[in-house]
Length: 270
Image (cartoon, rainbow, N blue to C red; front, side):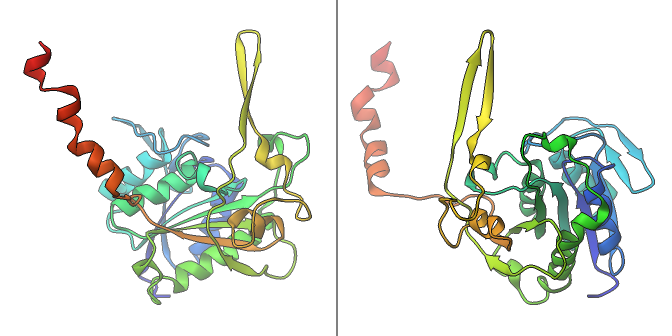
């Protein structure tokens, strides 16, 4: 990898998170890295965008008082113009399945970069938990060794071999580091969706039931999906596109053609 490679690094856990520091230190060994990250935790904010944000200079880089999408826009326009690559992460907690693609701030940063026509890598780490909330799980930098290893490898090689000629961004999910490098699977996002809600008086509690079935012996997700790969201790790389593709078909075209015939002209309805 050339010393001139410019990387814009962001996340959604906030600029003070252990995961972004671990990625920064690994990537900065061989690239010019500019951190533009949220000042506070912005997990699950999707591609929410602000009209105006404050920016502070911190020891690691720029802290934007806004969302990951804000960080990418501010970075591209002012703070780190013309990067070769955007990296988002490392997120504490996996981002698996189709249903998280529009919800995750980590992935949304990569999607925002894709609209700037800049390739991106979103890296997240699966953290097995029981009853402890993920936010209360403390992780040392060494836990991110798998994440930093695969992300650095992809940053070093994916551009030069043409990976991003076929994908706008890579959604990378890794297990917690455990000795030797894990095997790598090229995957599709799982289609499984198991959100639920429970009412308790004036409150409704949202429940994501998918995480209750991550046992590799019983997980229902098929081979080739991101969730199965990670549950079985492998690295998942899903090559994805943005914007999302459209699916033209005769049924919708026929419906459009009969619209005026069905509802009549606006003048006739008055």
